[in-house]
Structure formats: C-alpha cells, structure tokens
Length: 480
Ligand SMILES: [Zn+2]
Image 1 (cartoon, rainbow, N blue to C red):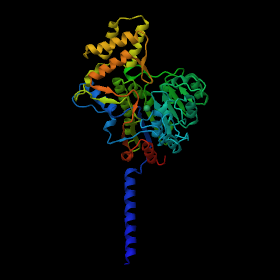
Image 2 (image 1 turned 180 degrees about the vertical axis):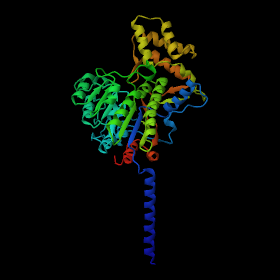
Image 3 (image 1 turned 90 degrees about the vertical axis):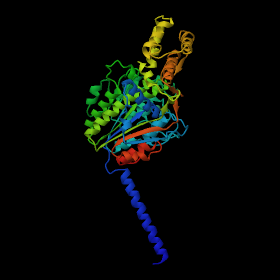
Image 4 (image 1 turned 60 degrees about the horizontal axis):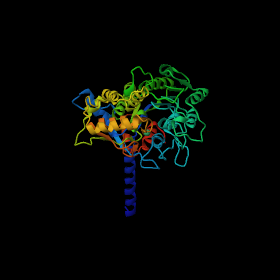
C-alpha cells in the first residue's frame, strides 16, 4: 500500500473514532429523554455561605449533633459558575437574570436585551414554542428584575409599566408574586408617566388575563392566563418568613402549589416553571443573617414541592436550583477559627420589623432607652442570652440619642431602610456568632448549581451561568 494511502486511511480511521467518541459523549451528556416538566429555582442573592450558613443555623436551632442538610444540597449533580456582566465583574439582578433566562451576557440594568438594546430570545420563549406552558413565581413583584427577564425587554430594569406591557404580550400562562411594582418602587424616570400598582393591575385585567388575589381560585382557573398577586392596589410586599403571623395565604410555597396545580391541569405537553426566592436578596442587602436563613429554608420548601412532583413523574422531571449572584459578602467565621450559630437562634424577627417597632414607640413619645433595650433583648437576645460589652452598648446609645431620637439618617439596605441602632444591634449579634458581612450590595463570587432529574449530568459542563438556560433548552430539544 502506498504511504500516502496508508496515511489517508489512518486519518480517516482517527476521524471516525473521534466522531464516535463525540457522539457517545453527546448521548451520555444529553440523554435521549427530554424533560416534560422543568423546575428552575433561583435564590436571588444566594451563594455558598447563605446555604451553608442556613444548614449550620438549622442544626444549631434543632440542637442536632450532625449537620442538617437542605434537600437541594444533597442532589448528586453540583457545580458552580461565574456570573459577571458585560459592564462589570459584579452583576446586578437584571444582567444576571438575563443570563439565566436568555443565555447571553449583558450590561447591568438590562432585562432581556443585549448591551446594544437588541431583544433576546428567552428559555420561556423556547419552552412555549415547544408546547410547554410557562409559569413564573416569585415572592417579590411579578415585574421585578428576575421574573421579568423571562418575558421583558428593556435597558431600564425600573421601567415597570413597560415590563407589564411586555408580560401582557408574552406567552406566560401563570405568574404569581407579591405585587405589581409601580413607578414609586424604582428611581423616578421622566421617560415614564407616573403609574400606580392599581393602574397596572387594571391594564392586566383589560388584556383578558385573570388577575386574582385568591390563591385557591387562581389554581382552578381554566382556559385563561392567570396573574396571582397578594396586593393589586399598592406596591406592598409579603412579609419575610421570620415575620409571618402564621395565617398568610400568600406565601411562595402556596403560590408555587397553585402554579403546579394550574400548569399540570392546563397543559398536556408539560410545563416550564421558574420560581424565584426574591426576598432572600432583600434581607442580605440588609445584612440580616437569620432573616436570610429563613428565606433559604423557604426556597428548600418550594424545592420540596418539585421533589414530591418528581416522585409522580420520575423520568420526566428536571429540577435546577441556582442563584443569580451573591449579596452581602457573607463571612462564616471571622473570629479565631470559630462559628457560634447557637448565638443567632435568639433572633425572633427581622431588622425591618424591629425598625417598625422602634419607630412606633418613638411616635408614641417613648424617649427612655430602657424600653427600647428590652425590645432588643426580647427579639435579638442581646443582654439576655448574648453578652453585650460596654463599648457595644455605648455605640447603641450613641445611635439612639444622636440619630434615632433626632430622626437622623437610616441605613439604606436598597429595598428597606433600617435605623442605625437596629443595624448595629444586628451587627453585634452577628459578631458574637462570628458571622460577618462585607458588602451592602452584590459581590462577584461564584454561584452554585444543584441539579436533579432528566439530563442532570449535562450541567457539569457549565462554567458560566449563561450556559444553564442553554443546557435546559438543549435537553428540551431546542436551542437558545
Ligand atoms: Zn438578584
């Protein structure tokens, strides 16, 4: 045989071998089965330390000797990804949400558009094209950054009326959240006319969508699109989990149950359901660890609903749990190789709730430190179970007399403002637990992915969050 022919045959053999290996790898990574039911969970602002901190907190609270693991951290497929935006190494929820929904990096503040403002196709569009019904659930506004990245297109994440118009024009079958955000909930942009939540609710009703305030009734609506909200007259959010009285119907769990009931009944071709735990980001912006841990537990509670659903549909369900970015730069352990989570079990309500109690007392004319000190003791465990040093009390007294009683400035936690005296009381409590925060905003650290179900191993290939929706699209049998 001529040398050149031999070489050609060798090269051909090698090419065939490569092709076979490639095909084998592909069939291994992307199984032939396609997920009929896709659950996409996003913990807004949740990274490794919020999750691990929650597990340590739950363990301390239960007095357990072994770490109590959250359901999703026990998934077999786990990975971590980068999340920077095109405008900065630290992303905001709009650019990160766009990456998670469209698989494209964009600039901060952009929703469903690239940095030049060009409209992007989303995983929700892909799902609708394939016949899946789409549901979006959040415990913040239905037109807040994360949910709106699945239907909206604007370079201004605070263009809330425009995002409502985009939602109306979309194929989203079921949406649920705390409210419809109005023009007062973001920076006042002169481009938009002042618009209220009530006006936006009317706009949704006039489009023929069933706007419901009733969780049970919303789940039973047939043949119509549904928007379920806790408030349709004012831009008001549902309370933090830690502040619940116990009789609330509008919770992330109940809204997700309603979405699953509606989508299972209304679609024979499967569904795609995104659920955002959005209040987790709010509490992390406030550097409120215990409140954040309760929100992470809420995320685990909605993941549990998906796990129960998957038991009924074992070979047809895909569950992806991830985040958009990290909020607050949470540090587990700043003090001599120690974490003392049991210290945090004394906290009974959020910093925001305590700010409201303090302000009410001030309105009632209470000006002595002692009754305020008792409130801090009863709700944060300071002095009663957590020893407070003289210097620490001096700081609180300074805040109390020089700022709080004089109606001075407050700590801006982006979505909520807290009194300095409360913020510092919380810092003292966290410090005694050896837990700290390094940012009032987002950080650029890695974010986790946990996956269970059809095609889960494909997510091991993801290196950036843009690859997550692309992988879901491929598994569903399309491209993004
Ligand atoms: Zn976010």
